[in-house]
Length: 149
Image (tube, rainbow, N blue to C red):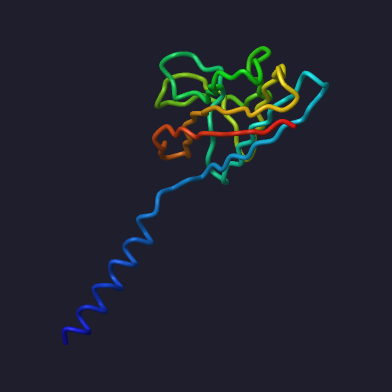
């Protein structure tokens, strides 16, 4: 009887753990393209599961957490301009009482950099918030590293 109780308990805890997995509807990937001996473009790509969306970098205060990028200071490179994004979709969200720019499915952000050395290690952190029609997940920070050769 004790063995049966133990086996049943282990099964229930395992099953409960499977249902308690953290949702992660966005995956990030990174790339680079050297456009001259001294310049490169860094690509930061979000792949977003169906039904979810992330927000633009260009939102008014009082809305959701906008997507943002912070590049770590380095002797290898300097940023050139702002991180650019494609044209965002826009909709009115009642919860924020405002129009917001957002992306679904996939979005690629781009940052131009001036290289101070022939090769560079570009590190940084990105922050974003992901929502669906019924809920938003807490803002998430992701560290990234891109090698430019």
